[in-house]
Length: 174
Image 1: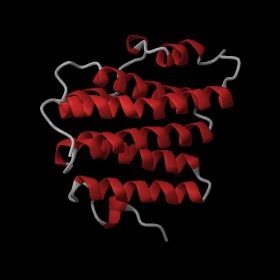
Image 2 (image 1 turned 60 degrees about the vertical axis):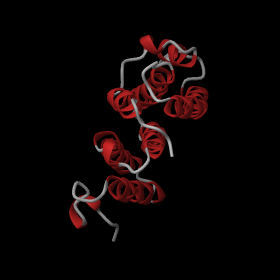
Image 3 (image 1 turned 45 degrees about the vertical axis):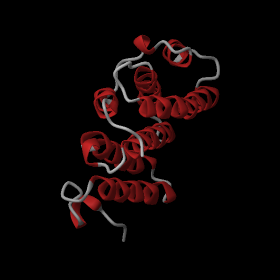
Image 4 (image 1 turned 30 degrees about the horizontal axis):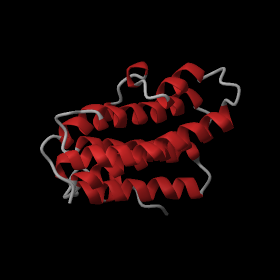
């Protein structure tokens, strides 16, 4: 029997990092069982926890990393379950959010550098997604091209956007 954080431990009452880890474990368990739809749902919950409870994380840089990891895993699970447009949306939105954070003058310098480092990961994930799922660039070409070429305005803002900027203001990485 798998651990269901929503039933067993009430993730909304756990510290943010513990709740995030519980949802990530659940998502990995569904992935290991080759159930990408359920894995995507659990990754989505992990992302909700990471974004919604960002101020509770001990280290802002860890919260940022958690959002990126969730987004990458969610995009992969969505693609595996055949929800390609949603996968493209998640990957491109995360990349665009990181671009905006990197360029946000009011954000802490450490968070801006962390965003720049994470951009390599989201860039690679988008390139891999396109090469595997849309090699001709017919379905997601404009969206992917906008994200890959740093045109954050061409990609709709992610729910993570407000989190990334508000968390980064005045907070330093430890």
